[in-house]
Image (cartoon, rainbow, N blue to C red; front, side, top):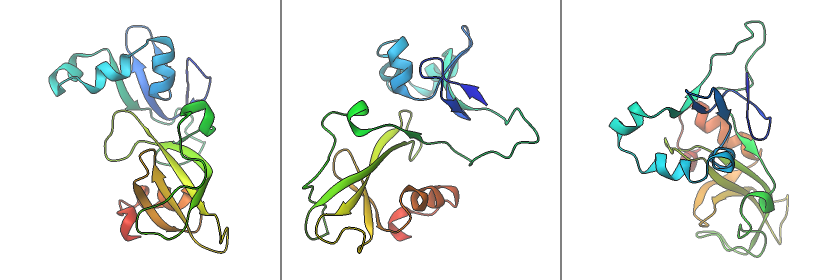
Length: 167
């Protein structure tokens, strides 16, 4: 396992800077030390990325005896730490009745995105834990519905290469 240079989080994947040997768990940590670097990487062509000294990578498990947690890693932050304008309560979700509130936030790299995206586990304001949850992104777009096991349902879909909307 590697440790993030900025926040000291143990990680199995992240940004690596070849020339300095530094590792960063998210674009937020990378930009904290090297402002705007993640934006610059996102705007590079494939050829430019191939020549860049900063890249996203997965590291082999360095301890052969230890079982890796999962084939990918998610990073947990509070909503306020990441995005002050993040959805919190009285959120309307397209295709669903009533309003919803955030019960958990995690950051996932979905669909080959260079910069991981914050996702929000939402619970129905009227029915609470009596109804399945939904997961939305920061724009309020539905990522997954009928969620019974929190972000573990999404992790399962990712690990099995299942479309979360058909799970």
